[in-house]
Length: 167
Image (cartoon, rainbow, N blue to C red; front, top):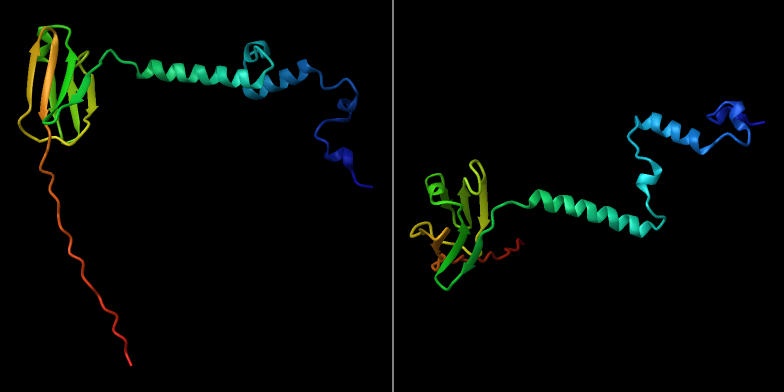
């Protein structure tokens, strides 16, 4: 005979009908998880799996939105000749702390809305490295960056290689 009882992980007194009570299982799980599990009533407000899934998804998305949300909002648009960035500045005194610079694809703005913050704004097209003008008027900073119109194109010659057959 095969020793089935020895392979079962619980002692023989657990083999009775009333062994696996819900409270015992909860106790074992809490002990195993170190008290990390929430109460069953907290975890499941309804028995609908899809409703629970959507509730959980909405909670996660709301947390992500709150993390991404900043006090800084800039308007970026382009004309035929330039890219224009506009953003509000709380006071004229902040202009001394404000630092702006850009590369060919991104504009960087430092110390807005607060000291130590750095904003990076993706530009809609490639811009020139010089000719940028910034102005402050009525609480709005406007940065005008000229677009790069002469994008260099390099012609690539193709070398023809003929197969030489050896006889």
